[in-house]
Length: 53
Image (cartoon, rainbow, N blue to C red):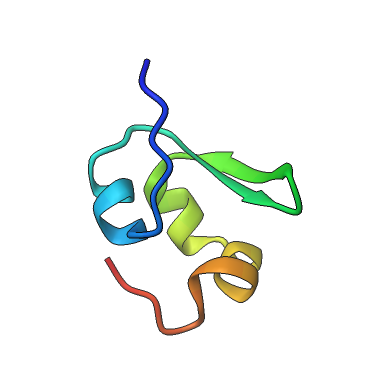
C-alpha cells in the first residue's frame, strides 16, 4: 500500500481504490472514492455541495 496526502482531491480520488477522509485528526469516513463523493456528510464537511469528479 501507499499513503498519499494531498489537497488535490480530484486527482487523489482518481488514482485510489480506497480513501480516508480525516477531520480533526480522526478518520471521518472511509471507502471507495465514488462512495465518498456520494456521501452527503463528506460533501457537506469536506468536498462541498458542487464537487464533481
